[in-house]
Image (cartoon, rainbow, N blue to C red; front, top):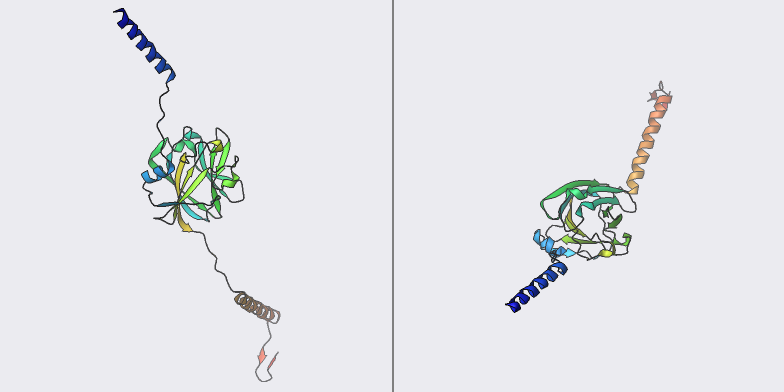
Length: 225
């Protein structure tokens, strides 16, 4: 009986030790590729260019997921290439943790070439699709082409300084072009000179008539009277 009591006491002590020193396992987060496939984007191609920018135009930007512990501090903005003026698209509280039950779409119209930026407000760090601008010298964004839709690109951001676990699914969204930038047709130089000459000639004729308002052309002598 005493031996049984000792065994029970020993097991109880062992259980206490296990409970005190064993931390619950963290659920494994999906990779960016798995996130895209879950969203239905199964035919994609990674853009290998370090700095990714976008041409002027009208775009729908759709937020799908945020697998980030501090997702409320994630901010997505766009900016004109070569500048540091950031235009907010999504603020942290608009999203959620994991997949959004209903993706959020916003429309932006940009009249210049632009890139995208993720600002992590509680750490005061900003990361870019122009990866060479990142403050830690690491890649913080991955951009994929949607091969089923050439107007759409898919973007994932990593929000940890130093690139952390490099999972790039802390902020996952798409950028879909709705209309191209306005293209001004080129006019040949010769045509410009011809039009300019006609305008000058017309202006000269009008000016002459104003200076000689009472003058008349004599058909017999061929002179202006």
